[in-house]
Image 1 (cartoon, rainbow, N blue to C red):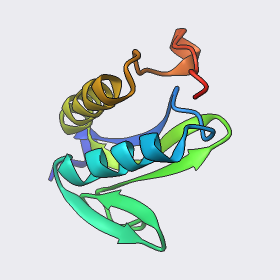
Image 2: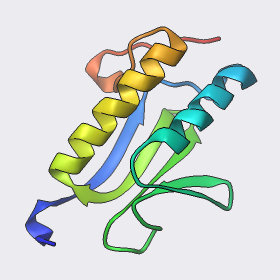
Image 3: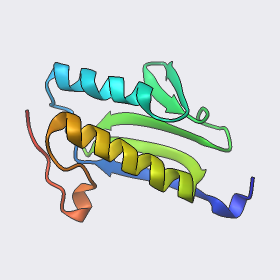
Length: 108
């Protein structure tokens, strides 16, 4: 794989940790439907590979929102996160994006 196309991911979404449990269950289901889902390790969802691999992606719930971290090929990341935002937006019934880009948190 061409390392020049690999980017470091540090990306927050406007999905607040205070969401109701049934909404987190919907998001957990979406995790499993996303391309290259590997499962959970230490209760952390992973895609593509594990932390320390050249290519990996994982999510964590932080005060700043739902956070994705990893290393992916730029084109793969862009299509992957667009699909995730669309699916979670449909499930949560609001627009999903980065708070720094003006996407507001919804508290449910």
